[in-house]
Image (cartoon, rainbow, N blue to C red):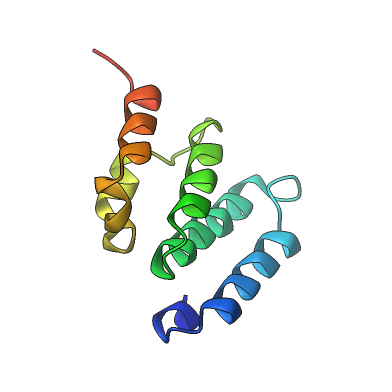
Length: 97
């Protein structure tokens, strides 16, 4: 995320992908998910919104703590909330009363 904040897009993505490869969900369901969420943040910070949404959709399909509320609390993901694809995903994955 530091590289993303510094505007070093390629290095940020490279390091985010490396983290998810070193500790994938299949090896550690708890921390692997965290690294996927971090990579989604990196993608968002560098303007790769479709890649960020791909990861978020994958996380929505896993029965874990990841939710719309988590996204709403993290200002780094706020650029996604105005995108039609994001809103479609929220409609699809949010529990209805």
